[in-house]
Image: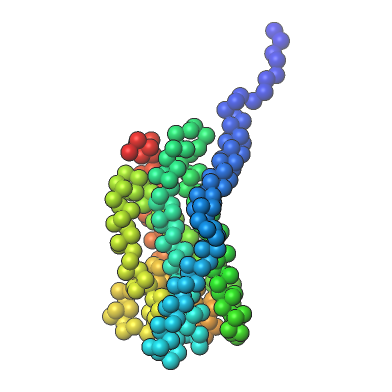
Length: 271
């Protein structure tokens, strides 16, 4: 009996095709996200830069008349930007990832599109956009005001990574909650409003009395802001920053979110 050599079974070839298909799907979803988020408004991506600049300018204008000098350095705009921008990266991710399934629900009915693809597309686009915006604004402020600043790029990158991990982890849990219970999007927006105050955007948590400081340090976003500022101001050590604490705050809700999405993602498409 002649035994003919046969090719590998189709199952053995699927992973490579699936990885390539996933890449194409994610790219297509990113392009769709770009057109819907930035392509329909006048100015498009310009607003992604102008909105934080406007907020930073207003904060700086108010506080420059209340205090002679900012808590760090000599420039109020740079100090406000170092708190406002990482907070925006985090809050944007929690909402963007949280709305991944509702936003892409019509496309998720196609077999080639997976809910992970929709989440990955939103994470990638938002992170790249916010990092570019962050460096444009910080770099622009340093050049415009001719500030003598020595940047520690490692600490800045560490702060960005912590913000991305925390925003994505909490966003994964939000993804299930917002898809299953649409009212959660409104509740989450309300719950996040105090973050601007308790995260140390316009003050240094280090200077707060210990009894209150210990409470504020339970907020992982405060650690991210302190770490970013330590990368901008060479005289600031950020001794209270705990990377491990931030990543744990990202890992726990992220794992719960993934488990819930894996178990109920088909049900979420019918909500």
